[in-house]
Amino acid sequence: MSALDVTADLRPQLLIVGTGQRHYREYLLASISTEYRVHLFLGAEPTWEREYATGWTVLLNTLDVDVLVPAARELAARTVIDGVLCWDEARILQTAEVAAALGLPGGDPAAVRRCRDKHMTREALAAAGVPQPASVLVGSVEEALAAAARVGYPVVLKPRALAASMGVVKASDADELAERFAFANETTVPEAPSYDNAVLVEEFADGCEVSIDCAVHHGRVFPLFVACKEIGFPPYFEEVGHYVDGDDPLLADPLVRELLVRTHAALGFTDGMTHCEVMLTASGPKVIEVNARLGGDMIPYLGLRATGIDPGLAAAAVACGRAPRVRQLRRLVGAVRFCYAPGVVEDFHFDTVGFPSEVDRFVPLVGPHHLSLFPADTVPGRIAYITAVAVSAAACRGALDQAMDVLDVLPHAGAHDRERMSIAAEA
Picture 1: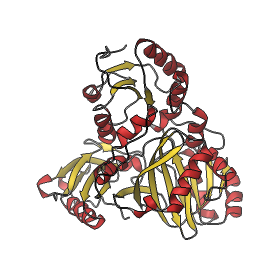
Picture 2 (picture 1 turned 60 degrees about the vertical axis):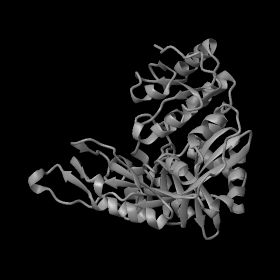
Picture 3 (picture 1 turned 90 degrees about the vertical axis):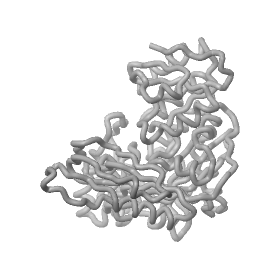
Picture 4 (picture 1 turned 90 degrees about the horizontal axis):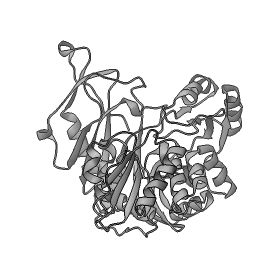
């Protein structure tokens, strides 16, 4: 079924496939709707999205290209579609197929597949000589052990087609690899593709890891902002926080900019948004992975607050074949910290009156009686996030620390056993 489209509105019309979770993605839809008409392809009737949409179509399966493409063609027969956009990892390849069917920018499924499949990413970058960790695709623990012996310990075990560092784990020797291989091989999410050979054994690249969100227009790469990652809970690589500095010198670093240009050229990625993860090692920057979408974890929101560059509008522009607006308006620092708790969570207790002025968001991610079936130190173990904006990283960190001091979690054990829980990860 479809809602009536508003045809009198002369703004460009953007077809967005999926919206993601409200607490992570609403700000994008809110920005885009100020300058674009938005038609949504959803798997269920919209709720919070209605405020930002001029129309929507409910489909039986938004993962199925054979459902998406006919629906997009039917929509295009009724009204002009200027661009197609998606920021959901599970649907970016299908969205590229839709764009290709409509002859719109971003319609290069092969380029998106080279980003979606981490093994294909490695092959493309290797063929172009782009600096990256050594990587071997394996299908068993025996193959993994043999690969690690060639690569050299420590190694990183990484699923071929997941996101958000899910299933990624470090192994310092053969015993740890044998013990942890199943974690990388078996961790999955319902909408992830499956492969017979599903794990990459990779060289451990030591250094500071950053991510760079880029808008790409007709092959030209526009870096928008840099996020410095905080990693916690070893041997996992859980991203427990991010800092975006509007004055980060990496944006102007010639080695980093050259790496981004070479990376996109190697992948054949000419139009759309990318989230590039780069390790700054002693021997120079190395590409860890490339996602063919906006970054997650509230990173684009932090970029907006820190720089004034609107990532939602940049994504909409390149999706419609337009050059993005990338002029920086301010130089602040934005930060996010994720909160974790093991087992069942009975309730939250927080006092926003005690939050410092730099804190602009506290968002619970779970409700009462939440039980994570995953390890508490992985993404599904998150129970809330806090963001802050200030003039420096130190001020953001201090504000987040202060906010954590007034945040309590009530474990499932009951009110009589209530105790203060430490839910801030060690960075």
